[in-house]
Length: 87
Image (cartoon, rainbow, N blue to C red; front, side, top):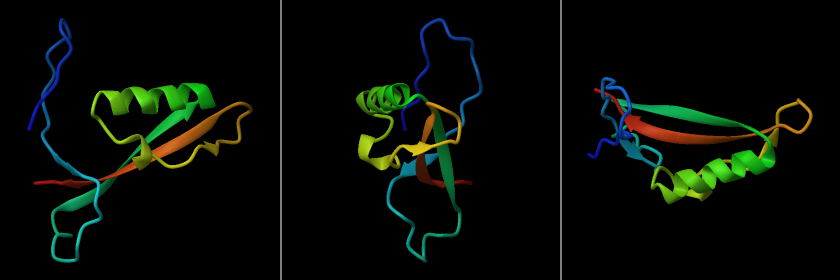
């Protein structure tokens, strides 16, 4: 597993988890959790963030949900759900 840190960024503890975009099978469900990341902003900003994270190899752009209104004018959200192994 690769850990990334920005040059000049302060040292922070590293947490290692295994990311998998496939839903767990019943045999694998022990030790796994669903984690949801939420991006909120303008449609343009959320799309730009998703594209940037895709270019960085963080997550496939298609793994994010469709843009959904938040109830605030001009604001949308998109959700990325990961299945992670936790120890």
